[in-house]
Length: 385
Ligand SMILES: [Zn+2]
Ligand SMILES: [Zn+2]
Image (cartoon, rainbow, N blue to C red; front, side):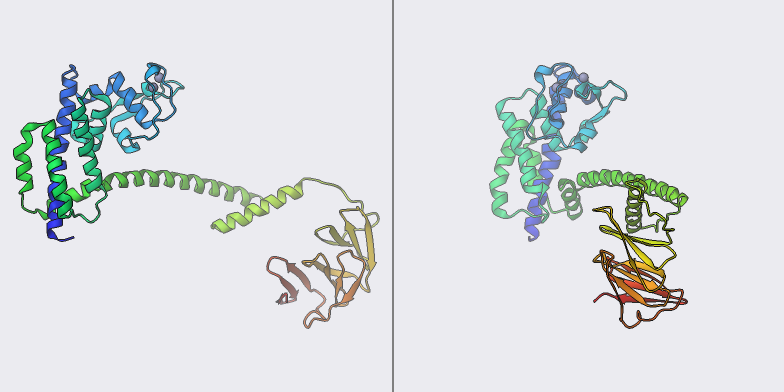
């Protein structure tokens, strides 16, 4: 885009903001003053207007009054910002939701941009077909050439084709604007004013308003979440859990709660007979447990059967492996590998597991695939291979 493209953008932008927009506002003002309405607010509060505009923002609504005129539009021409600019919802006005719950704000004609003024004109005012066409096309020009024009430039062919039509439509609505249009067409470039118009016409401020509202809503959601997590943390600390101030921590803790809730629900009670339980571990279909004897007991959930295998020495610790078999540390400091059905065993010869101290403990983590051995003052981690 060269300097002339930018100047042409400035001319069209000036025409829209300095001429077309005021023409629309005057047209609207004439329309309601001709009907004896004193100000824009009173006009917006008049029943047919608020009812019509209500349905341009709200879909699938049937109102409590005048419901023969209720409409459901396939598109909603009034956006949230525009609706918020015009109306406020009355507090405590009954269960139903309809136009009757809304009152116009003290909005001025100068608050209406070309889009909103045009929208009210086209939907709420009595206009001739030529006027309607002129308003529709001028609004369209703003959208087509300015609102999404991030390059801030209009080429010569585009401009030459557009200008005669733009002036025609303006003069159709207000013939007294001829001189003003000529002045704008010939005006010298004003860089700072052009930048201001460029920003105004891009509707950036409206989009920023919408983003600001969303961020506010998001913020309050996070505050609620934060309060919830804080409350959860406090109550979990009460029962011995702790959150590490991260979502991962919360997640892990929630998984922990899930497990603890499940285990609190009694599914069945297993009678172990004379066995005085000393240690147990479980996985899949099995529970392995021991008493003070040399026997490692195996309970099967699927058939409720208890079997036992007699080891050479008493069990000091044990852990379930991924396939449901168990590693058992016996008092003679050897590690025995017991099959998942609890029937067979053999000594583990892996270096570091063949001989352990008398106070050793062990734990296998199936997610990490790691076996951890404690031996007095050291912890040894074995990777599965
Ligand atoms: Zn109502
Ligand atoms: Zn309605």
